[in-house]
Image (cartoon, rainbow, N blue to C red; front, top):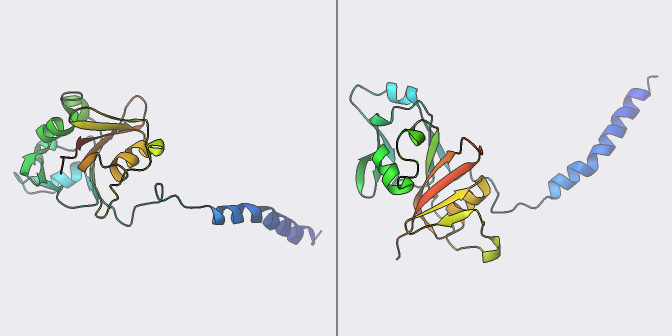
Length: 187
C-alpha cells in the first residue's frame, strides 16, 4: 500500500510530460505575442476624477506613444480633456468628431466603458500579406473600424491604415471589442 502513492505520482508526472513539452515547443507568433512590455495602461475612473481639485480637468496625453487609457462607464467625462498634436480638447466632442462620425454619438458611448490607445513607438506599419489581413476591418473615407481583438490588433499594429490613436469599446450585444481609428493622412 505504501508503494501506491509514489507510483501514482510517477505515472501522473510521466503522463503530463508530453503536454509540458508541447507547450514549451509552441512557436510564438509575433502578431499575438504579448505587448505588455511596450504598453502602459492608465485607469481613468470616477475615483481618478474625484481626486482632482475642484474645477481641474484630467488630461489624457495622446502625444505619448504606447499608452492605453481605460475609462469606466462612471467616469465624469465633462472633466476630461485630450491632448493631441492639435492641442487640448474636450474628450466628448473630440471622440465623436474623430471616430464615431454620428454613429454612436450622444449618451450611447459615454454610458459604456471604453479605451483610447496610442500606437507604441516602433510599431510595424508595413502591412502583412493581403491574405493575412483580417476581413473584419472596414474603412470609409475617414475612419477604419474592426470587430474582435485579433482584427483590432491587426488594424492597430499591422496595417498602415490608422493614425496613432485608436478608440475601442466592447459592443454590448456581441461582447466583442470594436475599435475605430482615423485614417492615416497621406505622407
